[in-house]
Length: 333
Image 1: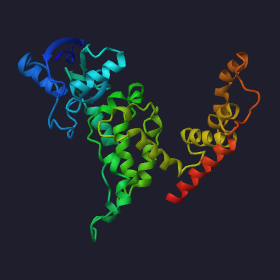
Image 2 (image 1 turned 60 degrees about the vertical axis):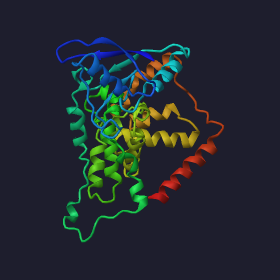
Image 3 (image 1 turned 90 degrees about the horizontal axis):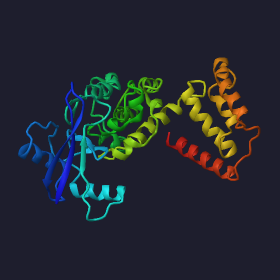
Image 4 (image 1 turned 90 degrees about the vertical axis):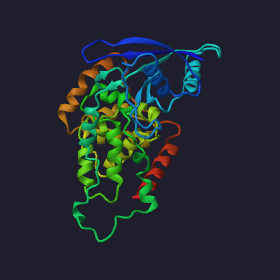
């Protein structure tokens, strides 16, 4: 099979450029194997990272045909099939492979990126079990299978950077720690061996740099090669925060709790109340109320301000579902 590889090449001081290589490959060959062949047979100056070649170390993460993944995990045949489906190509057409460096990180050379910010953000959540209260344990810190199961997903993370590369929140807010760090934060919150749970929760909920900075775009889940599902782990940290806070704690907490309560009451969100209760803190935040005035006036002028509220037909069913979930959560706690 004759395949074209368009590789985005770049150095720190130069603009990126696309360089094309041609290879006769077997469909079972991985993208990493193809990069090795290009480097060994055609261009020894091509730069990229690799190590284990077996989806363990996470070194060879890069953007392959528009998505961040591991070059040692993806093979040519599967990528061609995926591109044919996306672009509606026939079985005879062989699309080109486009290889680029990961996003949200500066490029050092070609497919090699500077991951210092990535590692700094991980370090910021202090992802190490603290047992200062039990410095000299009488026995090992054993866990039940149920306690260990809570850590399984985040424990699978190989820190490849794929989720960070695709994160919209990092793109718009460089201070957001990233899904990889918050997935590790979930482990710290749920690890019963750790003695800093409350301190960690206070840290992880700070502004838009912590869990509330997540835009819930789902990209991290879709590209994670190890099925860590970082978005789900962030949701678990949020739930730990919400279970400990009332609506006066912060606007982020109020937003979540108010949304659920309004849906429970009416089957969907009463827009007349939502802004006042969340931004205005139930009329306790005068500055917040005044900030809503321009938007409210524009809505009135455009005829888009709802003067009344009609509950949905399934309100009782929605209320029953929410109450059932709350009962289950209370039992688990």
